[in-house]
Image (cartoon, rainbow, N blue to C red; front, side):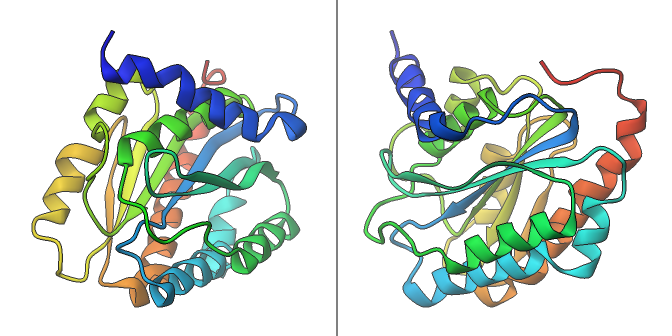
Length: 239
């Protein structure tokens, strides 16, 4: 049994256990969206504050709200922070975004959150394994997307391509948001070749953490608007 197979059940079990108390009932929605925020040691306190505030502000930006509600079917959203192989923390459990008030509540929770740790490496494969566990108990949706945001490359444990082989990513799209301040060589190519996965996957680039909110707005609008057009052609939920 390889390394990926050994850790598959453990990582999924951790994600399942994190939400046992509040697992939502199945509900029709057009997208199950997992937001994954990098809190590894390369992200300092100022940068972490910028990305939390940036994500919170992006979720309630007018164009993003319009994209969330551009189709009759709602979006289900979950969000977690990640760093080392054993360091994933669920911040937003699955919630159907049916009204603007739902987005405001999610944004406020993210804006108030404080990182769990700041001294662990970048274990992207484990983060993707955790995300797969979240998707395993998501509401029944037409499609599923994981958004991997980060400022560096995998440097602990198995890499993203191994995660895609070890976990159930057959119909899941993984998009990337690269925080690129010029300090990590070839990070754009790395995300394009190692992280992006699945139907319609794309990469959004933030020129440093100060640009995080703007890049997140673009990414969310692109994801949600495309689904608003395509959801009418779907015939049934994922899975």
